[in-house]
Length: 241
Ligand SMILES: Nc1nc2c(ncn2[C@@H]2O[C@H](COP(=O)(O)OP(=O)(O)O)[C@@H](O)[C@H]2O)c(=O)[nH]1
Ligand SMILES: [Mg+2]
Image (tube, rainbow, N blue to C red; front, side):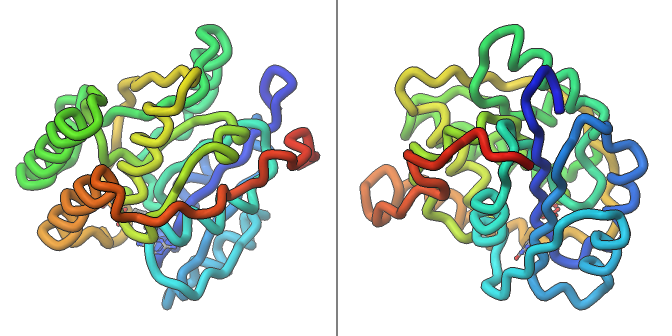
């Protein structure tokens, strides 16, 4: 609970048994609900998450976006925080991000890893991210530095208005472009630090990079069908965690 708001943390996980205990070590107590969406992990991800007292939701359909859609629909906090299950994103930034959100009346914060100069990231990743940032600007007019970041903090009620179609790694750019183009929604990008990953990355740089670029075009051209919001507009948003 933070300033009378309940907080849910949602993490998509595919074989992240090494990362989860790192996250638990310094997860602020203000987080009321932790949801791990497990995609048939072949390691002990689910057991580790349960042993930490977290909710595990099995999702048999593969994909980062698919896992997120399942997890976000199950979250009940007033504010949702997301991150990878690999320990890269800074848990102790959560209170600061919530502070900024409240003080500046922000609805959606996207965390930016690129201001952290010594971040552990290969040239190809940085280059790919930059290319996708440029197309996000050219196709949608959105200026951000890290279109592929996986840490977002936002009011859950936004989910009633977003058209989240992607089941893949493109979900990350999609949720940002949905938020940044919603009318009367205040969005902000804030710099965070970023650590070395525990366990192996699931990103296929070339395949996911081109797929994410193609996704931006397909969405802009209206080739993707509208989907149901993850939570209904008339849902009681004040439900208890
Ligand atoms: N549930 C689920 N999680 C996934 C899938 N692919 C990736 N992830 C998770 O999504 C997060 C981001 O993937 P990651 O490998 O860290 O990508 P990177 O940060 O770009 O290196 C991690 O927590 C992964 O475990 C998937 O198909 N299903
Ligand atoms: Mg990661």
